[in-house]
Length: 321
Image (cartoon, rainbow, N blue to C red; front, side):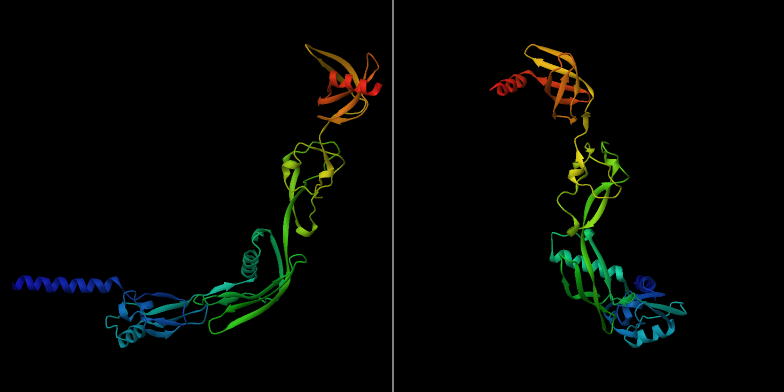
């Protein structure tokens, strides 16, 4: 019995020592509040964890305290297991949130999108004045950065706002003025495009313009332009207009073309000369070089037109009335 009791006492002592070893004094402490507690220094302080021991350094700064002083104060506060654990000093840093102009702009963007759900934060361009450099905010505050007021004229772009930053012991406010403009992506030539050139996706580049400068004739979807031809020479970076484009010209005025006559049961061909230019699907006048008659034909491909015999007869009959 005595041996068993002795073994239990030894194991209990070893277990207690092990528990202490599992929760030594921290050598580095990071806090977000203005006080440093027993639990900040000792992770297993239990019911003493929230007991204050020291005032924390200022926001964003650090300091150090002798480990023996930490242990003495923790024991005085009731945490009797506190020890220096071989440390000389303990470093304490108070965390902070660095607020700069970018953070404020992002917060204002979020607020504008909340008020106007049709907007996207990525399409808003902001330019603000009134904020003088970065500030350190208290991460323990309910709202380290808050927008106290915000007015925005969406059409003109004018914006006024008041923001507040919680700096621990006070709230610092800033009056901001500037512009917030919604940008719309339109497409323009990446380089000069010559008249008649057929446009490919690689010929185009996106250009962002304020919404109040965008009209319905501007190309906002590149697929609207791909495969069409330039009616005139197009300048690089100048927004494309729907009127700048047309189907590619497959037959130029004066071109020699192949006339294809389709009649029931057979297809005939002849040589002709175009009197006017046209793209695919356009009806143009052609001189039949054999009969010297002028007929109308539909452009189907480069240098090839199709004559609908039924259409020609109908046109002739109508012309004879």
